[in-house]
Length: 163
Image (cartoon, rainbow, N blue to C red; front, side):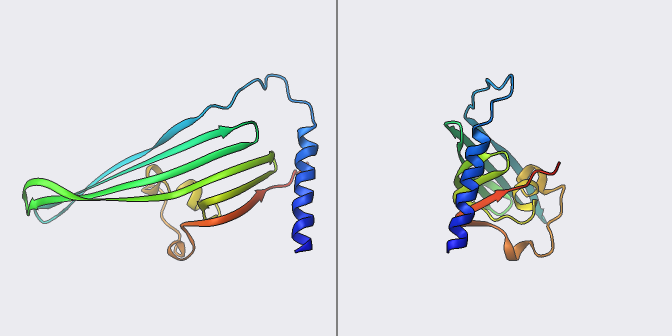
């Protein structure tokens, strides 16, 4: 417990030290909210029976001041089949899920503290290679079903300067 408090205190000190440095020239950029996401439409056929799978994944990034960012991604997936086998209109359920909703504190360029529901870090795969628009290019790791998804809690991420 004491080691964890010392570690968090040192991270805060590093963040304050980095914040005290003068801003580089041309850093007048103001953060703006971003609404983005991905769409996927995957039709499949089993004999003469089509199934239409549509996926909508909106992503919201909302800066809150200079050091905080609210981030969220939901997923809406619809599996639609013909009501009368291979004729008639399409009907089906839409499955909704909240993949993550987190708030990030960016202490400096080396430290980020995250709280909320976030993607479980699985090297870089879950966060950067798993989204819909990349998913068909990159194959899933063999142990992907065992240790991925979203988790609730706190996360400390960062790196060290190598000079």
